[in-house]
Amino acid sequence: EYEKGTESPWFPWLNSLPRVFDSGAAMTPTCYDCLPPLAAKYAMAERVKYINCKQALKEVDFISEDTKKNDVVTKWAYNVLGTRAFEVGEEMVIVPMADMFNHGSIPNVEIHYDEEGSCNAYTTVDVPAGSPLLICYANPYNPSALFAKYGFLDENAPATFCKIMDIIPSTENRNLGLSFSRMLFYHENGGISEEVFDVLLFEHLSGEWQTQKDFYNACMNGDVDTKAAYHQQYLGDVMGRLKKHVDTFLIELDKLDEKAASKDIETHTRIPKIMAHNAFVREAFIRVKQNSIDPVVGYE
Image (tube, rainbow, N blue to C red):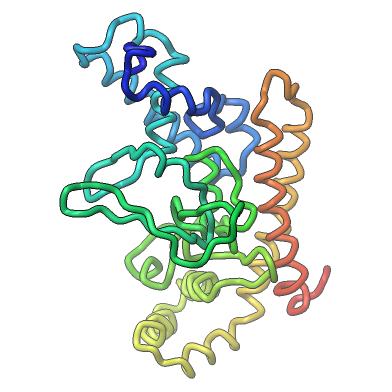
């Protein structure tokens, strides 16, 4: 459709689309270097997907060689697909106009497809005139993943992953909640999700096999009293690990900000958004430290 230019029936829609994107696929190594590990991992994964897509284009015979070799156009096309397509079953589809809905942690629009494949959008509440129409692009509890895929920060995200990434996954700790979308620090009140405590205590008990097994069974069987007793017994150990992690991560964020601030934003135009992402994470960590950790283990 790009090659057809104004002759394409989709030209008005194509011409309305952004020309520049801030997604992970559009970032540079400098961008990745200024992001925390998880966000950088997500962003680099988007870049790899783009590279794979560009390689696959070599096998497509209905696109000209000039277009295939045009990095600006191929990256633009990839970002259009990556940021505006919907997943329907096992397929990715683009629905012009429906792709204009913004993201919201609390959506007010639902999208349905009828038997003929037509897309229908309905508001779920009364929406005042002039208010945005919102759908939820992805899990609102993982703003770093949204940032990497779509290139924007969801400032209303209720939480962020706690950034503990040194735990080796197992069936047991996954069952307890080892997940980027379940081990959460809550942004507004500095709360900590139950899964963080469960996973950390399970890992702490790795040297006490029977105790670890009993704690795990209490979690899986809904034995609230036994689970609570274990948490109370080992509260100091778990909170101590959390404090060390949070204090260390805040220092790392400061270093990332120093690195980002040293870059020329005329050359590295995505740096301000990266710093905004890091600031959002920092706010959540500071509130967790102030409201949930320091009152238990102290300030020293």
